[in-house]
Image 1 (cartoon, protein in one colour):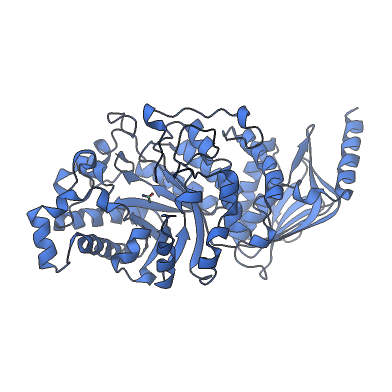
Image 2: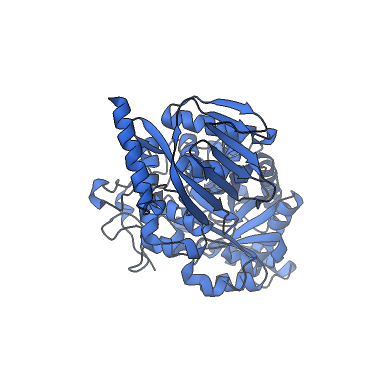
Length: 537
Ligand code: ACM
């Protein structure tokens, strides 16, 4: 009986394949590859398949593939290192002619061949393979096909704010898993802000003993932070998924949590902005920050440290009256408080440079006088396109994450009650998917300076995991396609078809999402407080 069903399914799949409509729906490779050519027939995945890798440096990829097939489908395949494929194998083959992050995936009835010139390219071949598995009635198939692929941009990222509301190691790892499946490779970790300092610094224990107390909803919430051991585990977990982690220690503003722990290096604003900035005129502040960044540089092997630099004017009122600060401005001939802000950023960027890292900063940093080769700019103020143009014309490398459409704390459907809006604008899946078309006329003149783009997930109104996932998915999937796929292969109808396949992956992982196919099936998880509904702009 089972055999009969199996046959019918096999015939059905072969028929569907011939009907020639499938290549954009099944397989659901997302982001859309450069080229997909369909073949005839299917490869049947069984527990007798062997994973064979040619080069020792692919051993971690082979193990990753083994683990994913085991977790998702219950397979326990054999793994071998050999020079040749065999019938019924998944072969990880070296091919030095393929570009660095590119890959080829060839599926015929007898075998699957993943080809790349680097472990990263091979990892992406594996993702496309995993996304192509069709599971029906306890049988597993892959349609015969050839895929040739390589990314549009090298920076395909997501920022997660764990300062406003803490989100734990397991959640971060789930997000890294999903990013990996989408071939995303930069995890920007916003670790410090007004509501909490979330990374252990051995030299300054009060940063977490006191600075990690509270969150956006509850000033006295139990302290939550990542120990250095947690950080090491997350960085290693990301490394195995070919994801670079970029830590952000926000300064000189957004420093209120550090100010609560060490008021002696604080020069905050008033009321709501109490303790908002580090004290820019004390040598002890710069020594403190150098110590902090030295520990951070050791924990994160990637080339970047993000030092924030945003919105200093929100809470630097004290700078205008504090005699020590005013004297400092005069003595150093900085002109005014803005000049002081730029001095601060230059000085800390030099610390980052001396630690062997490249500075990353929000777009306020453009005006700081930091040399363009020394910093990467994140363009975030979508209403100030001139900031994007300025960064590029001054020679900076740029990562794009404009509020509209890359901030995922904006609502994604007009019916939603919790989350940001900008006037009447918000970030629907379709709005997200159109990016970067609206800025193409600016960026097309600087193809070598646009590193890519990222989703930014600010968590003021995301206290729980279910709500966090709901705001991230499926919009992150659209960002992944914007960052990976050339404009000429993007198509929203095709995207929506392939998205269905990715939603099945989220279902298997138990990750919540907003369902654009059935808006009522996934009610908006409620946020933490009455302050939830806001508008701005
Ligand atoms: C930001 O949204 N303040 C970078």
